[in-house]
Length: 155
Image (cartoon, rainbow, N blue to C red):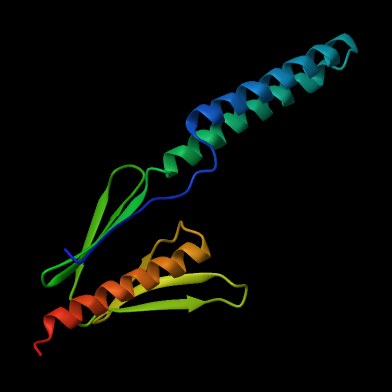
């Protein structure tokens, strides 16, 4: 096997850290809501509860989307690209490594997009990664394809 990459989205907080963040924000809002209740500003309290609930929902959605991943395998005679959604649905594409090229498109804002192109098929790779990570992944795939081509072509 010449190349075996598994790409997963980055998460800034581990689940336990996210839980502690939610507890701390909830505790802070609880103290604030008691103060607002004492001052007679009770209509503010439902909005504070809604804020904590929305934060919990956003963190949960973020971690659910973190289940997405992509796998690129280059072995004898084929390049297999598997994209797995956060819900576990897998889409597999097989490309011929000899005719596959890696396109790294730079945008005017400094972003980069990586595509695998082969015979009319164009697949975007690592859309959930940062621009420097996508550039690095594109270079790794190019290097792997070059190594495969050097092994495949007889001297």
